[in-house]
Image 1 (cartoon, helix red, strand yellow):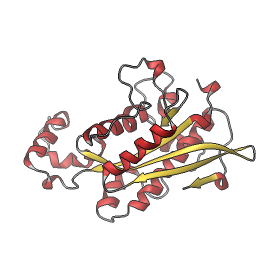
Image 2: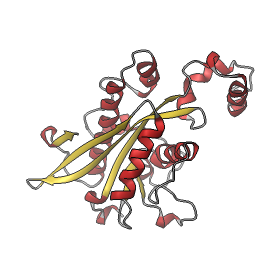
Image 3: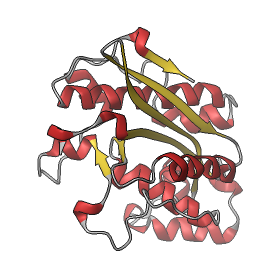
Length: 238
């Protein structure tokens, strides 16, 4: 697929998520019960469910999306360029509706593709689950129900790196290091997002971090294709 990949048809994306409720003690009794039951395998030695609540943001049943950043690749004076755009809001349904509209309007053709790092296991399923919970119809390019593997229009830079080694997980941060790509983790990392959102109340900082991840994913794909990286002056944040 990569040999014939048209980068202009690919929408690169990344999401940032946080727990719906910041502190475990503020959960209602029913949600605390379901949190402990969902994570029973981590608590089989008698641990406290509150001690593992920092992972609530990565589970769609207990977390929410606060930012979806996307990037498109274009040509600028015969060089590749990338332009990013972000959908972000304290009201998750608002940004999901906006993102769904983008996909329905501009990424509904048969040759449209989505790409994220670990997107097949995290970003895309998470978006779909949160859309259903918010009563939002899942756009066709996201919905893989009933589709054969070769009909799914999703690329995953982590899956491409696996080369069939399904037990292998490699972070975007590590791959940017080995491919000499500027790191997106030069300010914050994923473990700090909930604190910055709830305590510092700095969603703008999270948006910038999310957009850096999108750019890093684009750069990684270019490395896979044997193409030069995009220069800083050709990276535009909308």
